[in-house]
Every structure is written in C-alpha cells, then in structure tokens.
Length: 319
Image (cartoon, rainbow, N blue to C red; front, side):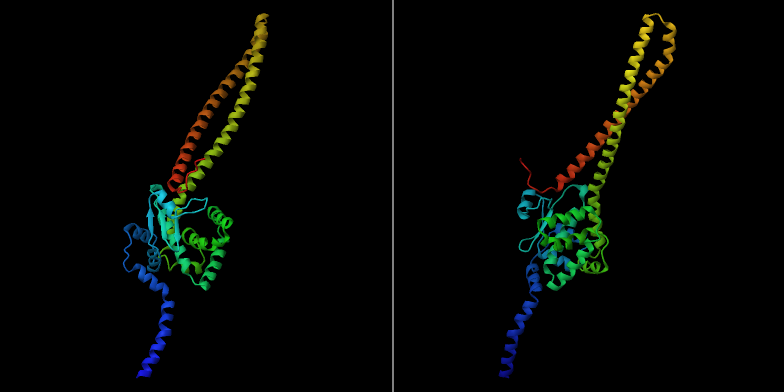
C-alpha cells in the first residue's frame, strides 16, 4: 500500500503540473472571470455582434471598457498611428472601445468591439493554427476589391508588416461579407451571425461613402457648369463686341442721314440684341444653379467633417 501511494504521488507530481500547463488558459480565464460581472454596455456590445459563448469569454476576460472621454481613451490606447483609432487590445490591459455618440454612426462601437475581441482571439491561437489562419486570410485579402480596406491594410504594412496577419484576422472577420468556407467555419466559433457584424460595418461606412459619392457628383456638376459659364461669358463678350461695332456703324449712318442703310441693319441688330439678352438670362440661371450646387456641396462636406470629428480620437494639431 505504501509503495502504491508512493508511486501514485510520484505520478501526481508529473501529471498535475502537466495538466495545469495544458489547461493554463482555461484556468486563467476561470480565475479572471470568477468575480467579474460585465457592465450592461459591454454585454450589449457582445449581444449586438452575436458573440458566441467562446467569444464572450475571450471578450470578458479582457474586461472591456467603453471610454467616452477622448483624453482617457488616448491614455488607454496610446498609438503612433496616423489613422483614426477607435479601439485597442492589450495583452496586459484589456480591451478599450471609444464611445461614438453620433447616431448616424450606430454600429461603429459594436464593430470595433468585435474587431478587438478577434485580436484577443488571435493572441490565443496555437502556432500551427495561426499559420493556417494566416494563410487563409492572406488568400482572402488577395480577392478583396474594396479600396478602403486595401488602403487600410497597406497603411499597416507600411508601418509594420508583422502586424498585417493579425489585422487581417480582425478586419476580414468584421468587414468582408464573403469569405471562403474554411474562414466562415473558423469565424463561426466567434459569431453566431457574422453577417450581422458585417452589416453593421457596412451601415456606418455607408454614412461616409454616400457623402463622398455625393460630393464627387456635385464636383462633376460644378466642373461642367463652370465650363458652360465660361463659354457663355466668351460668347457674350463676342456678341457685345459685334453689337457695339454694328451700333457704331448704324450711328454713323444716322449722322450722315443714310436712313436706308441704317434701316437695313436694324433687323440683324435686333437679332443680335435678342440673342445677347437670352444668353444673359441663361448665364444668370447657370450662375444661380452653380451657387446652389456649391451650397449643397458645402453642406455635405460639413456633414462629413462632423462625422470625422465624432470618431477622431487623435491629438489635435496645434501648429
């Protein structure tokens, strides 16, 4: 019996540490969450992005905080990035999400939360699984045609190419609607409906893209109108010169009492004046149209600036 107990204890000495090492992540999660109750706003972020139980655990272990003050957010998410940052994940420090209060951008906090949760999930992947997923996301990115997403990834690559796989893992999972079956299966462990997350992303991105498209449309109209206005002005200058020249000729005929010659020029002179007046009216209408479009364009630009201001957490440039 003593020998059995001795052998059993020896086995425990080897097995228990091995089990603890093998289950270290689960043990850490349990220890972290044992007395943690997520705030209602954090639960709402998980609900609206359809996070699975596995994803919620990863999310809650990071003890997410929603920051409404830009200074506090910048302190939590210190970044050298030149682009706008709306969230961050720190291996030690957790997840932070900036609270965007512009109702036109509903969904942006949820997508940011899902994005940061995927960073935390990527952190947990085994080396073998990470290699597999990196290969899948790289192939998926090669088929992405959305210029905004491509420019976003390119900006990461320019700053630090080593972070691209991690960023692709979060961006593709939350912003790209169609992925390979392998990636869809992979992301299903984190979202009950990944399509719902992508829809939120498309929803707030549309607030920017539709305004950009409208400004471009207005710019094209303004450009075309300017050409028409300039052409009309040139036509009016030419007509004015002809009218002045013909009037001088007619005045000369009157002075010389050459009434027949004078009367012969009256019809063509009246045609010139009538055409001139019509072009003046047309020019006035086009200038009014031009000014109206400029005003409408500037109103859209103001809206764009408001939206950018609502999400811009960068330190203001005081220069």
